[in-house]
Image 1 (cartoon, helix red, strand yellow):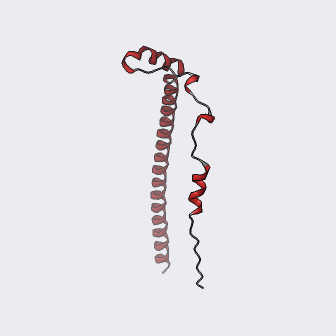
Image 2: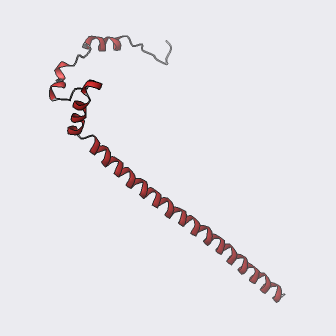
Length: 114
């Protein structure tokens, strides 16, 4: 009887050790994958920041103004100046009556019957 208990105990220990080894191996693989993904994210962020810097460099107002002047004959673009902008007072808003009349045509609903 004692031999059977020892055999079962040793078998259980071996089985648990094998299971723990498999879990450890899977965990190490998952951690490696996380490290790879974090490296990819860092590379992508770096590339994105470089692209943003390039975009800001290419969209400098003085560069765009020079391009507009160089290509005026072909594109007909005018350089943007402060005189191209208007004031808020120049914006045409709808009259206030048309906004309030839409609210006057509301229908009242009630769940009670008389």
